[in-house]
Amino acid sequence: MITQTEKLLQRIRELQDEIETDLRRRAEKFRYRLDDGRVVFEAGMRARHRALRVGLGEFLRQTRPMVVLTAPVIYSLIVPFVLLDLFVTIYQRVCFPVYGIERVRRADFIRIDRQHLAYLNALQKLNCIYCGYANGLVGYAQEVAGRTEAYWCPIKHAARIGAHHAYYAQFVDYGDGERFQDGLVASRRRVTRPGLSGHGPGQGPADDTV
Image 1 (cartoon, rainbow, N blue to C red):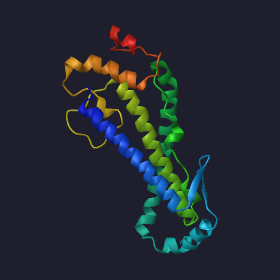
Image 2 (tube, helix red, strand yellow; image 1 turned 30 degrees about the vertical axis):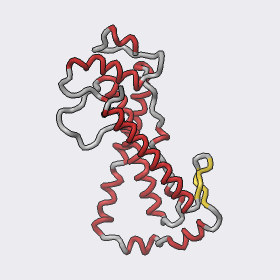
Image 3 (cartoon, rainbow, N blue to C red; image 1 turned 90 degrees about the vertical axis):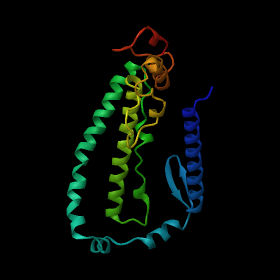
Image 4 (cartoon, rainbow, N blue to C red; image 1 turned 180 degrees about the vertical axis):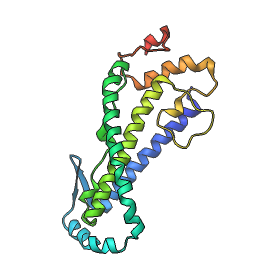
């Protein structure tokens, strides 16, 4: 029997497919295609884009001084971001094989491609590279953390949370002690590779089927 949660998850997947279809239509409208992951515009589009570019000098003249002064604060975050990237990557490479969890493909989350747009000036391209890396990294780290949570603690919170990862909807309800062990086994099945199972604290005999 399909549960209400499963119906909602199916609807989410359908909406995601609709979004992808819409993005493909927009790619046709703006006359570009992906060739082995590389964006290729049709002839003439890059020239049109260059004509739309706001020069660096004009761009800086239009920028409020206080915005310029905050730039070092924004870019100082590159240090913790790089450290997060390094430690999350090391963590999943060391621990996920032990638990049998499928590793997250970093390249699926961190996309650096907007700097190829000819209607952006040099500073805008740099900003886009930084934003693409930072936001992609957050998504990458959330996916790694989400799979970890699904493996060790698949329990919903008592109160509503602002945002959650893809696995959260199928977690066991808060306070549902009767379903916790079965829910733990089911959650681990969803994030592990067939035939591989890690064994750690809190795993009973039933977990051998994971």
